Amino acid sequence: MPLVKVQSRGTENVGGGNRNFVQNGAMLVSQRSTQTTGLGASSGYFTLDRFRYGQNSRDEAVLTMEQASDAPSGFSKSFKLTTTTPESAIDADNLFWIEQRFEGQDITGLKNGTSDAVTTTLSFHVKSSITGTFGVSLYKPENTARIINATYTISSADTWESKTITFAGDTSGGGTNNDNTEALRVIWHLASGGNYDSTNSTSWADYSTTNWAGGHAQDGVITTSNATWQLTGVQYEIGEQASDFQFESFGETVSRCQRYYFKIQADGSADTFAMGSVINTTTTDHNVSFPVQMRESPTAIETSGTASDYNTFTNGTAYNNTSVPSFTRATTMTAYYRTTVTSSLTAGKAGIHRANNADAFLAWSADL
Image (cartoon, rainbow, N blue to C red; front, top):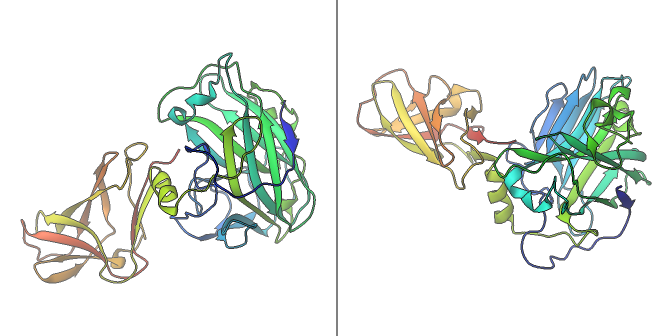
């Protein structure tokens, strides 16, 4: 059974090794964007790296998600949601949540599905304009899907509070696959309908829709105009107590995040994205080497969506692209893509792919 307690937490980095399974827990990296407005019916990754927004059967709610500078002592950034248009009511099939997903090969030390399964502790700082009881769950999707629910209470509105939740190890449901597929989620519930919170599984249980958000009671963040909810200092570790948050260098955090998402953002006009080779009068092929090995080979390229944000420079002349760069192929270490212009390129020449303005970017995703 999870034990929920509030305790003060320091900010020193103590002990050796990386004991925190959570990536970007101090909310320092936000490659996609520092703010996304108009967020509603789509689930996915939008701002803070590794923290995913989820929803089901949303009707009216519109949210703003951002990397905020408001944070508790010892931290500089936080994940912040603001409800700009509230959900008029939480129906039985409504759900809203924030989560982080973990690869199996990163959590084999939890020994899930064995008699030696270990106790783990989740700790975090949270701040909300809405007080009340909120749900947190651990969910294991592989083999036999399993879940355990817990709650925490926000006691004071608009005040940073520290929360600690301890979970027993799961001795049933099958072990963790030692690979790069999803094996565990940590979920913070923001609103849940009766179809999803009618069963409160405070011990590990087989997953069903009724225990997805068991124990969650306060839906006001989603049903209240201008309500806010913030999160930072997230740590998930082996043990029965929370240790002080393990800080790492910004570079370490960036590298861990780039395994799942890599973005090259222009600073201004004429910034170079990649070298390439002209293959005919209109087409140039380029390749980019990823700074770290990605979780899996990306299957698409993300761009600004505007062809005029890019040009190809070759033989002393810049040629505006006639379409956004197109995905060719990728491995876990390298991506290949193609650019096109109207005419006049010379096959065999080198081609430099560049930005026309600071809105231009290229990105590849291998997120869970």
